[in-house]
Length: 134
Image (spheres, rainbow, N blue to C red):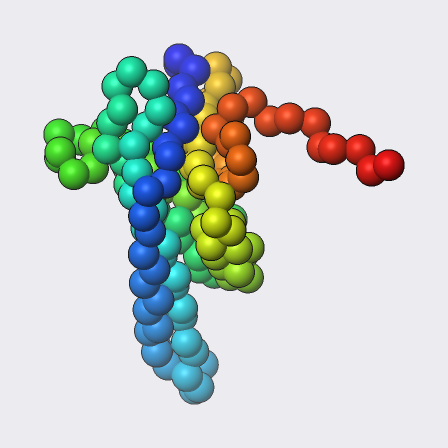
């Protein structure tokens, strides 16, 4: 398996929240799903259009990030990442920070997959060591 890495510069985003009611064990059980859709382009010579789908729901820790390539001109690359409820606030803080935002998908030679969402001046490069306090 080859090593893969895509850095997507986020240009716009939208959010969808759905609730499903279902009866379970005699009472009502609500299942909520939040999907934040990021749109942008990959960095590099190809500059593919990309869609990143961040899904927040119960049991999301059981799924790993995935990537797919299509012939669709609006979204040549699709990245799906799954998060548990409660992480929406941190994600929205990154998106609303006022800085450039990047989504990074990577897979190493042994098949370990990672997804990172980051913002700040000069993001998209290799992570830097944190600044030291004086």
